Image (cartoon, rainbow over all chains, first blue to last red; front, side, top):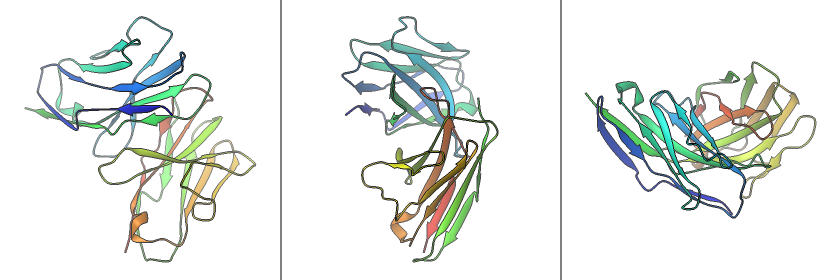
Length: 114
Length: 113
């Protein structure tokens, strides 16, 4: 079974600084997708970024980028120029390529200090 | 992307009663899912809602406790039956195209007394 591990229950960052959230996963599949979702206090889960395992290039979305290390099964999220609105729970998620079964990590609570 | 709404947003219920949660998507989607998120925890998949047929349940979840309907491509319901305080949780609906990212509703916060 695939598992997703987020080893940082909580992280904090100063506004305008950069923070990296860690995620590792375990799978025997070669093709799969990885996601980072953000869940603010409003509870709405928002897709932040997505990475296809077959792509070597790391995905980026404005201030959000990932460091995807396929051999190490690592998928970290970097948030640059942190903003107060970035404060939320961040969940890393894995889904096999030909399967809709998405697995989530335990989450990392990010606090942004003004 | 898809916009997903859920009703009710929250409810407080008595032990032994049932609550039906509705999920509406603004566009036709292939897949719809129901998750449970206990306080401070991650998401656990309850079941995949299949249009016109019985839902596919994950281990530890059964149809008698969590009956699910999906009469069309944009609507699904989850019923939490014979509730106990252990059922207090956030219930999230998600939807998307097959083999693609999922978009989530705002969740329903359920408290069982």
